[in-house]
Image (tube, rainbow over all chains, first blue to last red; front, side, top):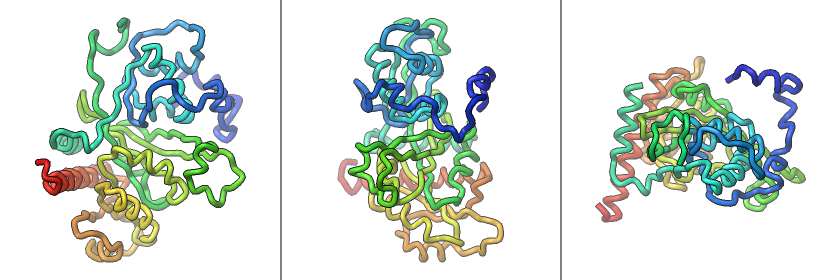
Length: 128
Length: 203
């Protein structure tokens, strides 16, 4: 997914160079989020259209808010920002603690009240 | 709460429910191909970095001395409706990354084990894993050109599968074929769940 405007940032390094900023530099050394667990498929949406830079928020936090104007899973956020999932979880914890994002934990099979989700998925797949 | 110019309608719109299905199997069997065949976006890649905190509980034999290991997972998305989103995750390499498998399998509705009849043993670890966890799964034999065609009951016997586990042929490159595999899995997962509920006497 090549987005116009990103190419300028990436022209100096190729895919083999690895991340320019080490993952835990982005989180200032933190390995665990301040709040929340953030499953790979927890869905995240920004609660605001825009966030002005403030103390404690880095460019990656703002990028997540920008990305989550549309609903995204934790895995999608990590893929689009090209950061490890663990790093994204820490950043999401910061945003959740400031009520800048809303998070919906995934549905587990054990918690399903009936077969309606299975039936909806089967019908949805057939309609693809 | 200020929703500003977001695409969502103003007010507390509930977020959709997300569910996941895993696509497992040996190296090069077509996991990412199947994810891509049905995903509405091109498969995305996400990475987990296993740091020293993970080393104690993960079997990293063979990579001793390494303090971090990166595990990549390819995944895709199918929006079923406004309130239901399905994610498909290709599982990372078998054996070494059970730590990531456990996280992926947690809450998964079911799994597709892709098999290649030329290297059938490659899918044994996946089958063992899902049997052990009680995750409903189907075995989809990816029909590679040039591979001898086996009957499904031959595959079932060779894999020593429970007779209730569906085995079907597929072409992971084809959307229709991959869809059929997923539908079969969902039907199997639904039946498994009903049987367990009856057995538990909760229904």
